[in-house]
Image 1 (cartoon, helix red, strand yellow):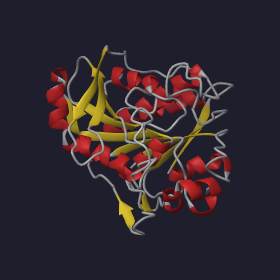
Image 2 (tube, one colour):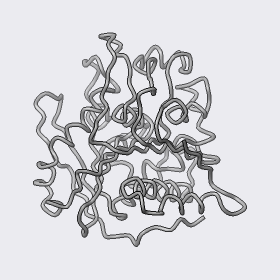
Image 3 (cartoon, helix red, strand yellow):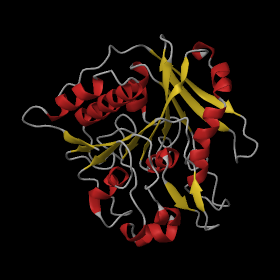
Length: 313
């Protein structure tokens, strides 16, 4: 399958861009990737997952996605969350080890401080379209993205509902994101990641593309099997799209990095499809007249051996 795209542009990538953050355990570090030419660049905030590797769960991960999105005309901003193994912060914080609220707050900080980001990367100055902002995330990063899109949870320490919906974000891409809590999660999750128990998608109204693998059982997280990762689509209101990838496991073919050992379903063709489909989705979300998404869906499902299926509501 070959999904048509724009001619790739040379990419500029700068890291770390350090945003001093006195109220955080360490300063916020961000990688900025963008095409070297062009203006009015849409912004994509990318939240990393929590894989086994020491460095991919940081601003250094997800090169297959980041490189492609930037070459297609997006400015991609990816922070190192406090949950990253690269920081090795320990477990004194009540939110450790996942820092579930802090992750979403990292993204809000970045949006609040785009002037500082541009100042740190002079080649980017004046080129961002701050009216076009999307959030994307893989695995735990998908949970982070879902909170910014409107999903909520009950804080296990204060027993209060947490609403981190960010109105400046107008689209989302959830990649192998967690589903609902309650009886859908395992005892391991209930005992170790209790914030997952109360995940509620009923207020997640922002448009989003949910990407799920039909072989992503995630048995350490859920008792429901692969369908759990489609919950953000089925349980949220508003305009949503579900992309189900045939044969894909949690790594969706290897999106967290090139030749990553922890990828159990290594498949370069699948990774290429994810990069192209997500890019096409964002292009059409930010520019409704752009036919990129419609064409990508047609190409995905055509032929004798399609890589996946798409449904929308």
